[in-house]
Image 1 (cartoon, one colour):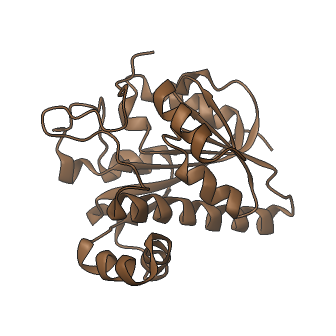
Image 2 (cartoon, rainbow, N blue to C red; image 1 turned 90 degrees about the vertical axis):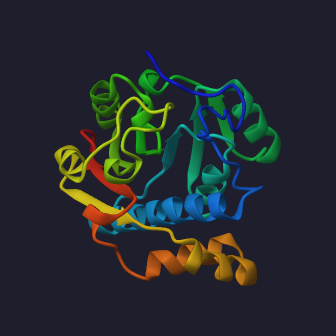
Amino acid sequence: MMMRGPEDITNMKDGWRERSDPVASDMARVSVCFRYSWALKRIRLLERATGKRVRNVLDVGCSVGYGCKIMRDGGLDAEGMDVNPGVVRIAKKRYPGVRFRVGDALGVNEYHDVITAFEVIEHIKDWRRALNVWKKHCRLLLMSTPNLKYLKNENPHHFKEFTYEEAKGMSPKVWGMCLSPITTKPITALFGGEAAARFRLAAGKPFPRLSRHFLIEVDGERE
């Protein structure tokens, strides 16, 4: 598989930072909290709809593990996987109660109730194959990816950025994610990044076509 990924946490290239550390950056923390708070909400809805408890979650592209921590704190058995050994080492050190491993996004070959892949699919050249692999190994797949309307394929770390129509082609269940420093910074300063993320989540769903990132829910092929 061809996948562009850093060997360190930032991997600056042509002025683009590939990864941000949610422990060190308020805005990164709010973004991560927003995505995983949304994931927890969708997982609880799945449990109520099916009457089946979600036992385990695989976080593909887990980076330094902050999202896995959020899911663990939410009562889920979360496991993180990332192609970058460096960030996996950081994750293991920070969150010893969570399982982390080095792995290729296309190498998922075991069943999980839920797979999350936030800001991952745009890094994969054969993204259609990745989508199919993930769907085959879960009940529910939750993803996020940038809106081509805003990034315009300028990020050198990305193989593919998606329009709203392309996101809808992956699943009819597409939400918008719009984080503004104007609203998040004051709340973060007063209450922390988790509170800011919950505020944005509760504030409503921005019209997806106009949002900077898409949140995509895909039904898996396993019951």
